[in-house]
Image (cartoon, rainbow, N blue to C red; front, side, top):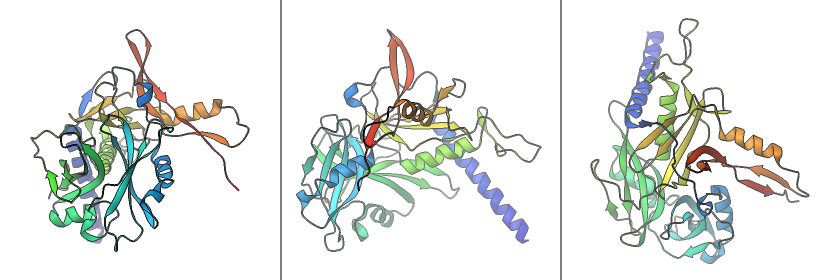
Length: 354
């Protein structure tokens, strides 16, 4: 009975994973061609990583006094259309000062631009205590939903900073279904709660929860065989060969500016299972839906391979070291009207102190 129960639970878990993969497979839109039809302008290429943005923000925390910390840091679009990191600053003792004191805005495309200090207080946020903490606050209000990434962005209509919370729900069938995000004002009042048929406002830059998106891509890639899904895609003994169509996420989700629409989109690159050197496909999450570009037959290299190629050709500096990070996939025009995919590989320099 113990063996039977264990086997039944494993089989049920496997079925539920395939069910989630089937839901996501029907949710996305397979498309052909290239992710972009125009070249990204030089001043819109994202060069600042999250870690670098936090490092820059910490140099300006004295603007908010002592005993402060960075509570969160997310990327979005500023009112002028530029790509920026928004770092929320709060107290190191959130029980005594349970609110966000202000924000440090770091340009994501140009390191020479001085950060902007916003002394706008928010009653809710990540890293705060009890019901001022966004995930806990939302969970207590509606336990039927799962709440993920929360970030600050600007409402272009009301011209004010808002707090957006992404979410999804898990039904009795254990399928993780997407739901539109919520938006709150500085006082923690709900300002936007759309229905499934209502369009998400244009000023909301990220409408899918990052954890949900990556988990569903993983499920789909695990069970993919040809154009469908297979419980035994991983193979079984010598009886069932593993599928060659499976894929896995190469790197974390990248939020970049779409040169065609000038909107922030999420890009997730995948590689064949067990081969991180090749690019199997690209997921592009937009306001209209999630698009999947299958490049499994194109022999494209992955971002990891592009990094290694660039680092191998860099000369040794007099001091410190060069390194590459966060390669970005864009379309470039190689001749009039002819475009190809290319990796933009930012190069950084560092020197170990002491």
